[in-house]
Length: 146
Image (cartoon, rainbow, N blue to C red; front, side, top):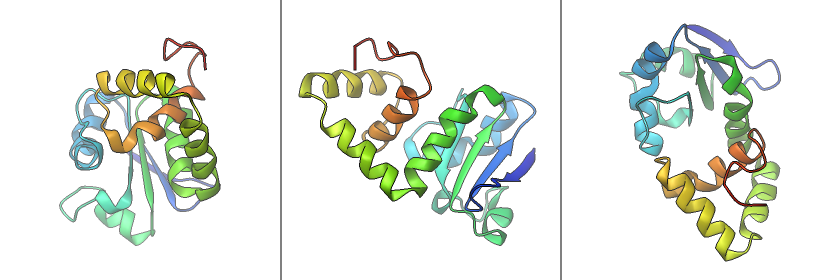
């Protein structure tokens, strides 16, 4: 496990793991507290407020005044996970994304919401997941034209 404070934003901690199993074992319970997901994740992302004293990363997070944590084992997911951090840490970006999502017609919003719920995401992270997938995956990821 390697801790890296993002050089562009000291509020963001990126934790690199040697493998998926170790990553999910270390961060799974925290992700579950945040969004109800914990097993077989390709990456983790959550606000630091969800880290408890009993979590392995607690001391580092609090010592360095971290506000958001990303966990990865495969570097190909870093852009997706960093967009979650941006959505949380950059209020202007969040406002733009929220407006973008809310300006979609109701049929598209419902399709995207149902699509993400089938992947296991809860209501509170739908817009956040929408933007992370939209800007890191192929244009047909959701199965509709946006």
